[in-house]
Length: 283
Image 1: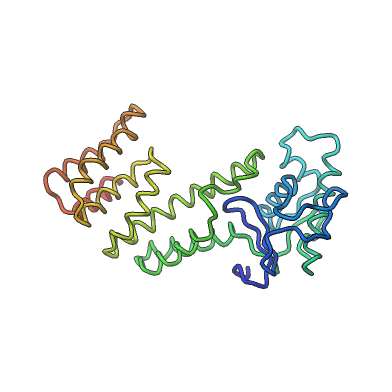
Image 2: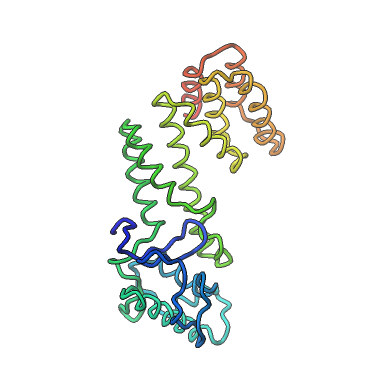
C-alpha cells in the first residue's frame, strides 16, 4: 500500500464514502457518465458509493456482479440489479480512466480493486492500529501514541461508512471499524497517562464518555486523569455522578469498580493509586 500519497487515488470509508483523485479532486469529472447520463459535479451518486464501498472492503477478493448484487441489496434486488451493477462498474472504470488509473480490474469472472495506485483509509487505519497495539504492548508508549494518533487522524467524523449503512454488510463493517476506533482511543489515553501527560488524555477521555456513556473504562480513566491534574473535586463529584447515572441508574446494573474508585477518591488517593486500582480491578 502506498500510504495515502499524492500520486494515488484514495477511497475514504472512515466517514462518508468518497473518492479522492490523484489531483486532489473529490468530485466526478465532467466527462464521466453514470447510468447513461452525465454525472453531476460533486460527490458520487448513492448507488455508486455502495458498489465502491463493497469493492473496497473486499479489495483483493474478486466479486462477480451477482455477488455484488447480493451484498448491496441483501437478497431483495430489483429485476435490473445485475445490469445496474454492471453500469456502476463501467462508471467506476470510466472515472478512474479519466485520471489514467486502471483501478477496477477483471479477475476470475469478477471485479476487484487494484493493489497499486489506490489507497483505502480503512486499510491504513487497521495497519496503524496493529503497529500501535504492538508498540503499546511492548511498553513503547510514546511511539505507540504517535502511530495510533496517525490512525485516528484518518477519520472524517465519528461514524464509518455513514452514508451507506442501509446495506447490512456495510453496517457490520462500520460497527467493527468503530469498535476498533474506541479501543484505539483507549490506548491513546492510557499512553498519555503512562507518559505522565494527563492533560493530553483529558480531551480524549471526555470525548469518549460523551460518545460512549455506557462504557465504564473511559469514565474511570477520566476520573484518574482529572485527579492527576488537580481536579479531584470534579472527579469525585460531577464526573462520578455522571458515570453513576449512565452506568448504574440507566441500566440497572452494578458498577463495583466505579464505586471502589470513588471511595478511593474520597479517601484522598492520588492519581497513580487510582490508575493502579483501575488496572487491577479490570483483571
